[in-house]
Image (cartoon, rainbow, N blue to C red):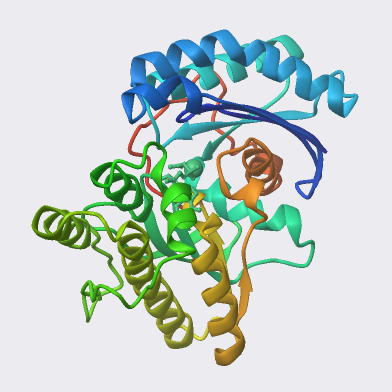
Amino acid sequence: MIVLGIESSCDETACAVVEDGRKIRSSVVFSQEKIHRPFRGIVPEIASRAHVEEINGVIHKAMLNAGCRTPDAIAVTVGPGLVGSLLVGKMTAEALGWIWNKPVAPVNHLEGHLFANLLEDKNLAPPFLGLIVSGGHTDLVIVENFGQYKILGRTRDDAAGEAFDKVANILNLGYPGGALIDRYAKTGDRDAIPFSRPYLHGTWDFSFSGLKTAVLYHVRDRGAQDLHDICASFQSAVVDVLIRKTIKAAKKMKLKSIVVGGGVSANSELRKRFLNEGKENGLRIYLPTKQMCTDNAAMIAAAGYYKLKTLDPGCRMPDKNNLNVDPALPIQNWS
Ligand code: KG4
Ligand code: ZN
């Protein structure tokens, strides 16, 4: 089954053609990073306008690269994300669904980040423990089966990526901040500043806003001359918390595999330490390749494929007249 994926939840306009949920025939991403950089963050109105301008060209290119005239189905991100941006993808997917008379699968962006790993490892299948670390979310979730989830924990304030972006802002590094902090940290001493680790014992939830404030106070009181050390020490604190809690949860829940997804999974220290800790604890760690860590439509097509396979045979897919976007869409079981 050939699925055309469409992703426009934030600042990437993306389209991909994926075969049987596992083989990427094409993947095209138009990043709006340069457009938003002068504003040090994403401007929602500008993002939606850019999606409108780019989406037809991106779809055309993805279809051409894949040598695909008509897909068997369409998958589109319907949340969480920026409402105006989501609507551009949804309306486009619906229009194509009607023109081609094909089903349209609504996909949760966060599920997509986990499915990115399925595109890269053909043997990966549930059950596993998922850690989604993106600009807006930090979720720890048991994936019991395709579309069967048990949420263990989430962030109570800033998401991991949000904390990276805010700290980069405090340090005047530019936007988006995660990759920049990662780069500066490479030549810093991660033990230089003992930022406290917010473990929130007794719960699987996370909290990163106190850590961000600790960096703010450090810079206020001592300046940012030790920039590389600040980046390395902050990054190390975030990575410590994410890894310790995730490994502990996997052991407690008796899950042998951990699947990581979202923009922060591109972080070099997180990747290195997850692989080491996984080996030490007898756990398999799945990390997407760097280009699959950030937003793309192949992961949406992959999730859409499994959703269609699970729901479509019994005609349990939502009617394509009735697709809704939800900026705060939680991870939910496919019913
Ligand atoms: O998944 P994503 O592309 O978009 C959302 O769905 O939010 O994630 C973007 C987030 C941003 O906060 C960005 O700073 C962070 O991922 N990020 C990183 C790195 N690369 C991107 N954070 C830490 N280290 C990186 N190398
Ligand atoms: Zn994302």
